[in-house]
Length: 191
Image (cartoon, rainbow, N blue to C red; front, side, top):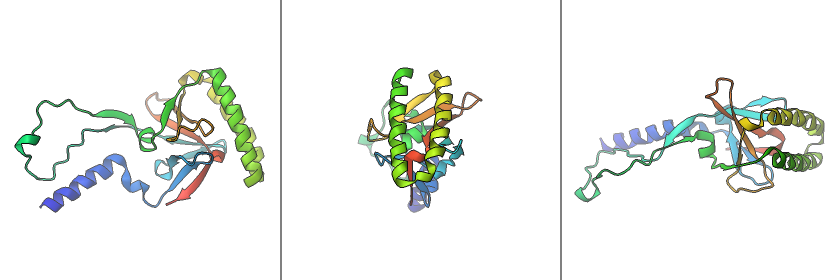
């Protein structure tokens, strides 16, 4: 009976955090920092040939009280403890992204420098993709600048200032968040 309860508890955790989708999938890592930024389990879609967009969801984390059938001792009894539940974005949480801030001017400085470094990287590693990247990236950056106030910005776990900034916005419905990572700024590592 106890083993069934333990397995049931693990099943609940796997469902809540989408763990099973991480098995046999590929992770998208930043080419400069090696931070994991996204995985195929979020079903990213390629946009304009240069950006992967993936829908996110808000999830509740923390205060995991998993009943495995054991009787609590008297000294472990909970007495009006405040809940530590928190609502977070699943991709931001699972990949430990760190929110950062830009004004339009500082973002333009950052993105121009980042695009030059990605272009140099592509010239060395994949020269056939340079033109696709330059054209598509320019188009997508214009889209971001055109609605700049609607975007949120995140660094990878290492908070490397030279690495990719993950972009986040909301779909037309106003409630579905999505993240964007630059296709040419990542390497895919299969697990």
